[in-house]
Length: 297
Image (cartoon, rainbow, N blue to C red; front, side):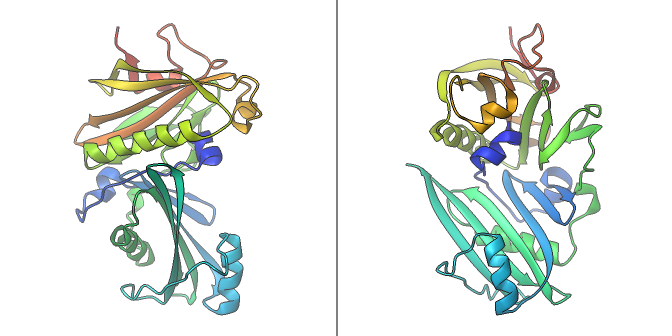
């Protein structure tokens, strides 16, 4: 459901990280959409984009406006990066226990223009993680195999190829929307704690937003990628709500399943959803959801 939630609710996940080199083959995924590249690893969404602007007061001022960086926002140089740069960090209280962190790096690249990096997550800022990926991207060290094609016929779901046909499309990295067949987003994590934090944050942030109300919330037994586990099932009611989310779908109630589970050699956080007017099989799920999960009878 991150497909619509990413636009409406700005979902960003808590993460864990490490210095292991298995990120590329096991957990990191990327999509290039024209001039911007989106990445996801361990539940963290981040992006990079290169502009023709010079790294000067005039050139940066235009980019600050583009990224809603105010003149009053503190801009600091990260001396650990070998490239000239300025970075800005913003923190916003989302719920009583959750802060939303957004980090922006404005970096003078090898071509003497500006590359902009954005990192978004909940919790505390982790500059070690941010610097690691800024350097990897600037040095062209992201392997080609982590990039997904923009057109979808099949997806790599945590190491398993799933055929989807041509009716589905990406709305963000690791986020698939299949009109009237369901939606889902997922991340591959190194630890179960990181995966659980990711789904907990998605649930808590969604629950705190206006425009809908929770009708029911329960734990249900499921089989997720062949493993017996539990999922949090939540039904949201959008009846009478002036919500863009409801207006785009035409539906009134939205059913969401949140799962954090070991999948093969890693851990996966997954948020799956469907509207009441979507296609629902006799097993009680939308077809896309049945690609990865079944309800345990």
